[in-house]
Each structure stands twice: as structure tokens, then as C-alpha cells.
Amino acid sequence: MITLLVALIIGALLFGIGLYGALSQTNLVMIMMGVELMLGGAMVNLVAFWRFLHPEVYAGQVFVLVVMTVMALEMAVGFGVGTARFRARGSVEMEEARELKG
Amino acid sequence: MLLQALFAGFFGMAAVWFGVVVFRTSSMVRSALALLFSMTAVGAMFLAMEAEFLGVLQIMMMATEMAIMAIFMVMYMMDPGGLGQMDMSHQKRAAQAAGVLGALVAIGVALLTSWGPAANAAPGAAEQTRLLGIELMERSMLIFETAGVTILTAMIAATAAAIERRRR
Image 1 (tube, chains in turn green, yellow):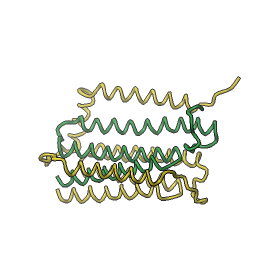
Image 2 (cartoon, one colour):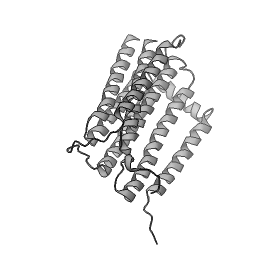
Image 3 (cartoon, each protein chain N blue to C red):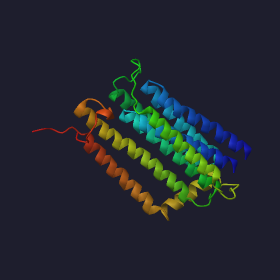
Image 4 (cartoon, each protein chain N blue to C red):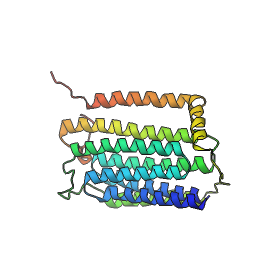
């Protein structure tokens, strides 16, 4: 049980750091890093729930695979938007972005 | 069990520490490397929690992902080396408050909830991978296929967004 609590606390801390990063950074790539940390925290929780509460139900592991997919998709779409933005305005600073027009 | 908690705690603290370094260093390349180390520590935590397949997958995926991220950072940042000491943050106080509040609420829920008895043993690595494969090919097949189609859609969308438009 102690490992479950350790994992949940670590997951909460990673989520908090990621939330701080996503809200405080002005650069698109750094904001994406914050979101990655938040998803990392969620994954730690999911693995801990699978391992210590229901190791016989593999839907928990499938959920982690889905979160990993979301992380990869977030990177791909984020960099796609970043590339379009950099081409149009020469920067990926989100403070200057008031619209999604490329 | 105690050894498992110690290893999970050690790698977890490493993940948290490198997570903090991501937003403290002014060099973008160091930020990307710190995030890589943080995610690798998360993968090591999975290994400590006996989720071997997911642990190895996490480490492999993040190594590739962060290498790509570092390249994009060098391409797009005005000061990737952090030599100019540019401040690229805003609303710091509010962000700190939100981060601390989010973490505290999650810790509170973790500590105050009654989770019931913890399972003592998990299946071995080979058996786990076999059972995960069966889960993916049977009960969760629709979810798995949906993830595949979503990846394809995102690839096309990202390429379409990034491609240069020629104005006539």
C-alpha cells in the first residue's frame, strides 16, 4: 500500500509542476513540455492503480497506452501548428498569438 | 515490498526533480534533456512497479520524442542556448498558485481516500505482455484501433498544418 501512496504523491507533484509550466510559459514548445509532465503524472497514477488495485484487469495498461498515444499526438499536432506559426510570424511565442490564423 | 517502495520513491523523486529543472534552466536544450530524464525516471518507476512492458515502452518512446523536441526547440527558439537569459514566462504567481493547489488537491485525494487492500503480486513480465496482447486483440480492440486511426488523422492534420501554402 505504501508504494501506491508514494506513486500517487509523485503523480500529483508531476501534475502540479506540469500545470505550473503550461500556465507560466510563453513559448509553445515549453507549454507542450508542461502538458507532457501532466500526462506523465497521470500515467504514474494509472500504472499504480493497475498494479496495486487491479493487476488482473489489463484495461488499466491499455489506458496507459492510450495516454502515451495522446502524448505523441500532442507533440505531432503541436509541432505542426508551431511550424505554421513560425512560417507566418517568425516566432512561436504564444503571447503574440491572438488568433489561430496561419 | 519495502524495496519496491524505495525504488519507486527514488525514481519518482528523480522524475520530480528533473521536472522542476525543465522550467528552471534557461537553456532550451537542457530543458529538453531534463524532460527526457524525467520521463525516463517515470519509465524506471513503471519497472519498479513491475509493469515491465510499459516501462521499456515509456523509456524508448520518450528518448525518441525528446530528441525530436530538442531539434524543434533549436529550430524555433530565439535563444536556444539560454545565453541571453531571456525571461519567457508570464503570470508566474498565478501559475505557481495553480500548480501548488493542483498538486495539494491530488495529494489530499490520494491520502484521504480509502483504497482498499493492495494486491501483493502481479503476473511475471512475459505473462503480463501476453495478457496485455490478448486484451488489446479482444476486449479493447476497438480502443486500440481507434488510437491507430487517430494517429493517422493527426499525422495528416499536422502535415497539412505545417505545409507551406503557395499563394497564387
